[in-house]
Image (cartoon, rainbow over all chains, first blue to last red; front, side, top):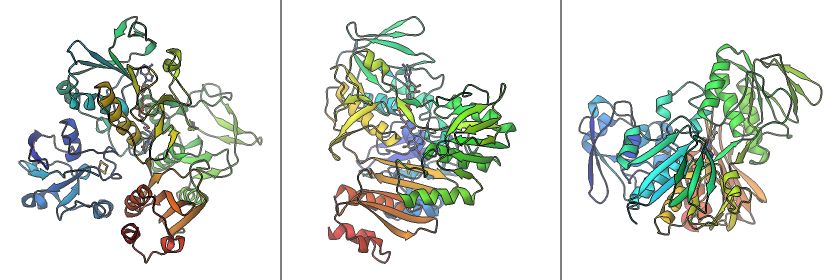
Length: 106
Length: 409
Ligand SMILES: Cc1cc2nc3c(=O)[nH]c(=O)nc-3n(C[C@H](O)[C@H](O)[C@H](O)COP(=O)(O)OP(=O)(O)OC[C@H]3O[C@@H](n4cnc5c(N)ncnc54)[C@H](O)[C@@H]3O)c2cc1C
Ligand code: FES
């Protein structure tokens, strides 16, 4: 299982094994990482699962789909590498990937 | 908060899961037990009529949390067990397995159940409701050999089910008793859009159509309407709304009024009992009225307040209600509650698959239906929370960026 490193806004780090095919959002929820709220449970309708992919991993994580990109535009704290974590499915290539979480999802 | 304290949650769904997680986050050190009458660990309900019914996702993907997460939280589950009564005098529950379960603090997350249709033939094989996993398994079984289906009820669940079954090649007829779809929850433009969308996808929609009996020997074969018309069908799905599960609370003398009555801290009229989710009637401080909502965000956000109350903390539940629906390739996001609106302003082209309906009450935006318009939705939420006063002409003018309306306010 690939290890994903989540870093919260306050610096707290979590290294977590996540099965391939599971979303970054679900991985965070299953491990009680507070920085992800996920009000809609992964349906790409709420924007409360926002994360920033570490710049070194952007290519591996891939680009946001059209719908996701529109949602992302509305997030005040977004960055160039922002994604909705429910839309990023873990793959073997993500071993060691670093994901930053915003201070707040609202 | 001693270790001998026990928190018990009745119901094991969206509200319950958030509640047990929030309990631990708030430092609850006592035991936590979830009693659920369903035989499954908590799963997501929204996909039941959407991606899961359409066959796009597998059962494993419905899990709300991996089972290991509950071990880490030290939460135990009694699955397939129904709570029969709350004995408030002795702080214990009577279970249907003959046992009693004591509690220091109790959370009612009993949700809602499908409203039943009081006509002949609803017990025939091939007739289904859609509320839980077992309902969907039944529907899927019937769908394997079905060429036609009748759906009774043109609310969101009926419409989503129509879309999901159509996707599987089943010819669907949908009956709605009211003159239009979504009559109680949406304006005419939104109703008209869904009527058109379903027609485009081959669904037959009949409004002002009341089912008066279901016919068949052992399996359902036809639906008879009150105008005497009979529609042959291989299966029937009834989606005519839900009833909150409040009986346990009433029997325990808690205050109940179209839901278990709770304040903005999710506290019931009993000091050791909280409630969250579809089963509650709660005061919404933003809207300044009592609501009963049927949505996942409501269940989870209210559960956070309930968990805080159990831990002796105060966390007010004051959120703007919102909801969503997926049908075919169309995503609807609804912000706010449109009750009492005086005007509905359209932004975008209502003949397309992408527009929004903004509900105005006395110059203020109170709600919006956003059809394939995620940006409008995100902004609508903000505009509503700001009580934004909006010029309808500007709102309808797509050349004005909605964002500017927010900053100007
Ligand atoms: C098909 C479908 C589609 C939906 N789509 C959406 C959507 O797109 N967006 C959205 O926001 N919401 C949607 N909803 C609504 C959403 O699922 C509910 O609001 C949510 O499930 C409420 O969660 P809850 O925990 O309050 O209650 P529930 O999910 O109703 O769970 C309550 C649980 O308690 C159990 N229970 C009740 N009484 C007892 C007892 N005495 N003993 C033991 N167990 C008991 C019940 O069996 C049930 O398992 C949908 C619902 C359905 C059915
Ligand atoms: S969880 Fe709601 S958009 Fe990702």
